[in-house]
Length: 110
Image (tube, rainbow, N blue to C red; front, side, top):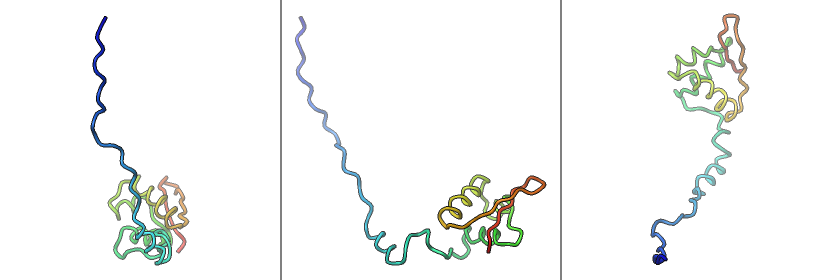
């Protein structure tokens, strides 16, 4: 018969710490200014957001290639920006149409 070994000691180490909470100061300051970041109407002058909005407000709108050239972004980044930032965060309605040559054209009512 074998002798049993002594019981193992619990390993010393870091114990799980509680999750950190977000600072409340930013929430209060934003509420005092009048809402969330996405409710902000104006965009920073000279930003890529401003550039895209100006292109989309033109009478014919802008093609995906024009937006890519103006920003230096990849196609998936342009589409994501239109969907996420312009559509969801800023609440703008972006219309999309495919021309006869198969090129996608985006526009916003000014």
